[in-house]
Length: 192
Image (cartoon, rainbow, N blue to C red; front, side):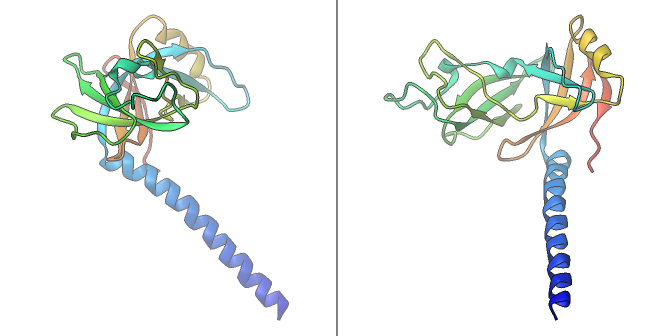
């Protein structure tokens, strides 16, 4: 009888694990399939982690948000406490999306035409003083590449403009869809 219970327990555990992994993959695919697509200008950062394979580490113009763009800072707050931030992006004429406002709470207005919100995380201790700059983590700071491609792309990023097509879910969660060299798509993420 204990052998049968052990087998049933193992099968149930395996199904739970498969279900959890499927849920994560389906959530990412849903964002890529149904989200709002934005183009962000990339700023190169020197990465090197030999154990993780080829990738480029990405920084963005929206990685530095002046505190003066944050619309809803309570007057008694001087620092962030490991919290969520929503950054309102607006599409410029050059096709890139740039930060125009930010919110620590829920925005009072919905994004307008050619606007979208991207969600980030502020580390505790980030200064909310008027002259400070915030550095949100959007979870889109690495793009993995086919083996042998990373160094060449890092080098090219220093001499010409690169971008990343990012897809945003309704709640602002971001997923990288493609790495762009100017208007040319270099690598596109598969849905699954």
